[in-house]
Image (cartoon, rainbow, N blue to C red; front, side, top):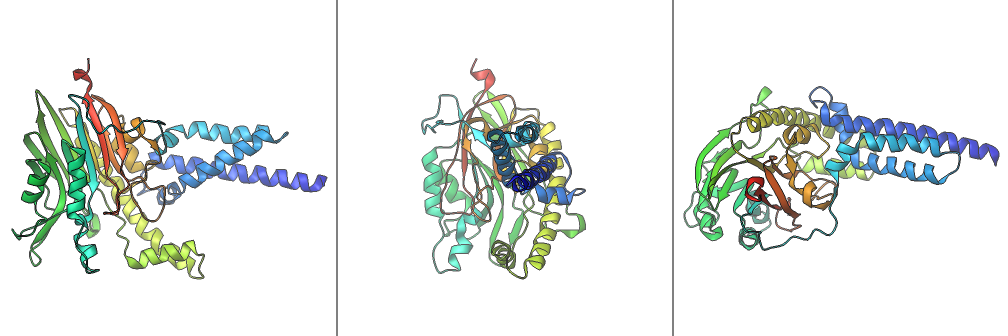
Length: 381
């Protein structure tokens, strides 16, 4: 019995130390460019699991006499990793979302609409979800809507076009990036900013494409005149992993511990590595643009990366994450692969007070929309 206790204690100590090391490396991912540290970037995807394990080692160690000093190692790791933990979990319990806006507040929505599901559902012989999605957006009464993977058909009779959507949502002002044009099928896609207030200036920045790697949608901005104030709103859609049906099959192989797990893992790791590298570069380009803004600013978009990533920390810098400020939980915004993927964000510069924020779990796109109310701090004094 004494030997078993000694062996168990030693195994606990070794596993505790290994887990703490891996956890701290996953935390370091936030500050190390994934192009130079791909293994660390991949490890960052395991952050939720490692966080859970470190916490369990701490709890177990606290309640077992003689093991408590080793539990302090886990506690120290949690303290060091607090910036990552705080970006991953929002702790505002009981903050309900009030559909009625505070007077003077700006309501902002971001949503990767996946082309309103027009192509995905039509392949299955069904209609898209445009009507349902527009009804939801209109019901939130947003002042600014940022959409990624927005699609605009050139055919006037088709309801999936900018003119129809502007009229339906009563958002008359817009700026559309038109990143991809398909003349054969007469449609174009990209990111778009729709506004209730006048847009007085716009910019667009296409990302560099080193090595011809397929990039994604641009970074665009719109200077919006809301009353006496001018604010700048950005939206973007950063590099996707570009998973295809085979890659999702490989993920299932890994989950099921199939015999071909090694080949599946190598294929996925290669794609993830390329995407990490390009997103890291794009994040630096985005941050450089944000730093140049002369106005109080907001950036909304699909960053395609998790909150403990280099991408997130680089873009956020000293800005506020609306969900972390007023939300609760993990805030999953992407529905597939993992239940912990929050990759859609609303970030605001320090000039704003975040009043409320909510993620809405809806069935129509592979992403969930995020809505936030905010107000310039100067207008609340």
